[in-house]
Picture 1 (cartoon, rainbow, N blue to C red):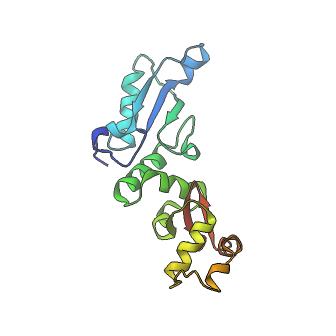
Picture 2 (picture 1 turned 90 degrees about the vertical axis):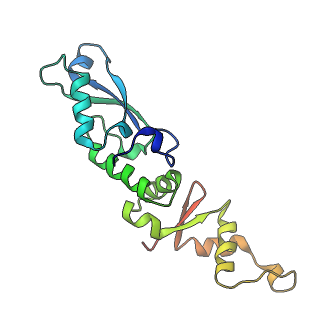
Picture 3 (picture 1 turned 180 degrees about the vertical axis):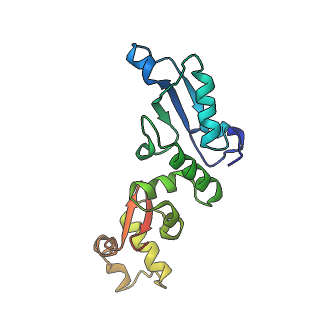
Length: 174
């Protein structure tokens, strides 16, 4: 990834993890620190930083006690760092914003299919249906039958092949 936090423009919250250890936690302490994942080029560098942070323990077992800046589905108390770096690399290489990618992941679309499945941001299912109708050549008119189209019904039919999350719409046929 080879980026520093100042180079990341697509991520609204910097992806960070609070790193403690199970030994400290079991002794009643949450001593640790927030580590910004973009400060490390890969998981190996991140784990080296974790080891340096907890060098006062012989064999620290890392406990990721909190997180921010990446989807909660990727959070794990004791791992998942490789997947998070894959996600961060994808954000860096994608033309899509992080919130679009997170919406796709929330709909269980595989990371590698999100760009192809994405159909834009819209205020409602009805707006999305109107957008898709225009994309198919529909031209609005104030005369019959155009002024009698039930966009709510059109949206319900259309959404059999599409899904929306947080205003972002994706094809179900990825």
